[in-house]
Length: 67
Image 1 (tube, helix red, strand yellow):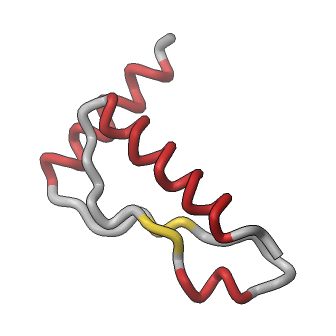
Image 2: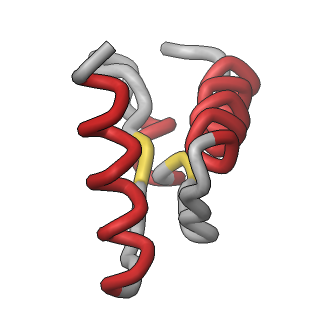
């Protein structure tokens, strides 16, 4: 089983990386039920976002892909 604190660390790093690129997904979190599965790593829920956030995420990913 993966350490839940490790999953939380990944979520915080993902949140920070997104915000550094102008993207805020407030519902990014570890999926609690996935922590109980001993045979699979935890899942990260990215959650819902509005159109402006989807646009910002798309722009950030395209910019990163062009590097």
